[in-house]
Image (cartoon, rainbow, N blue to C red; front, side, top):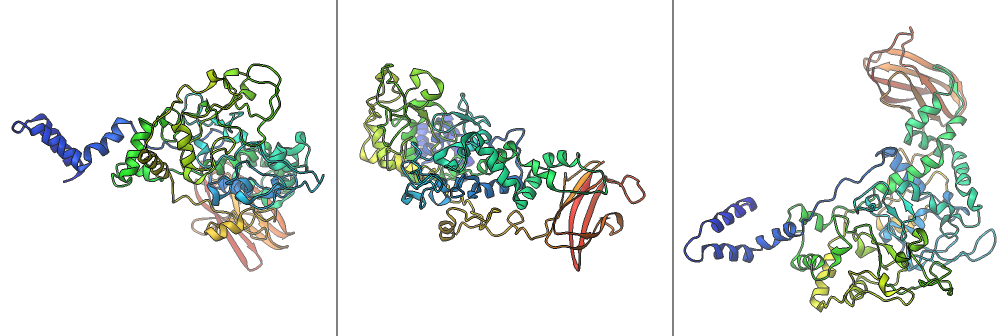
Length: 548
């Protein structure tokens, strides 16, 4: 009998007594088979599937932009001393975190939990650790706003100081202990990185492809159709905005939404075992986890005071919660940005997807394992000595969980793991520097194969932008060597429409505009066209679409 058939039969039985015990028999049958209990969890707790990740208007999904962001994410060229990348602290092999209690960024040695603090190659000074635990970048595109709903302007970081991925993506460039090191002055850090990227021809081409509207705007300021352009002005496509959007585009696509829990929500009763289902029920009832970790992403995006014991250096604050001077070293959390004394010691509620792979836990990595986290909440949270009792979250109270209940809750936490997510590491980056974590990724089978975006700088890269186009487009290419070339537009019948260039050309980038007109100066009809590059005996072809 199908699931729908089972429920139809059950309803009929409940509505039509059969003897004295007809309705009771139906209930007992449902309970015995598990159908009632399984469906009741989904209905009773209103379990919802994961919604589409939100994209900002100025940064829609673009695969070329995602791949550019991946290269930037793994490229140490973004750091002041060219020794650290975003991936140094956000490693695919550690759940896109680093496994350390406190992050060790610029100038550190090693990776993951074994990474050691390093010395600045410029000043010789020790670069201290980041005073907070590294957050995973998994699912950051789903971070919510004040309403708890996923938002393109959702809270970022432990204290919510940034809103939205695009803004947060640039922050590590200006923070000494993250990427800046001593290679740049803080106020010049981002501009210095942009200058480096503009000096790498491969990055210039990748930014042009990833941001066709911006490239088109620049191209419109260049000489008109049939003229050969100097590619230098197109370096201006690399800006603060495009850099932040590229990195954000990559991060927004790193989502763990294919978990056993998701399959269960979609209707697969066998996706969760009995212990995991019991843990799911505890999560919503006795354990009270849902009071903070609600919704498909398991967070309400609020800031809560848990009273976690401060471990590590913390972030200095001048006063206690009573306003009296005190020694520095305690992390005041959200208060440092809001100025609201109720926020002293408050930190953002993080989502729980992939939580089994992102230890240690809490803002300062104070709890080493998920078992420690469960024990922490079972005893009613903490009472960190510098936190006023009235500031502690009112939802904290002793839970009285049995050992079996703790085991069930732990089992459910593991059911929030997406075992299919694989964040590919590029085998090379345009700067030529070694991508951090490459060897670890090789061992884990997470190295990407070569692709167009990862093509060697010497490869011919023929494309046009915008595409499709109306009126005018720019044909872009990279010549691996000098020689006689011919660039010509053909229709789908193989007939020549317009020759754009013929003659000798030095190796390097070339941009040639086509105004959508044929050799006679007449507008070409809408449809598919081919742009052909002949370089010696080689021929390269790309498609483009004209829309009138």
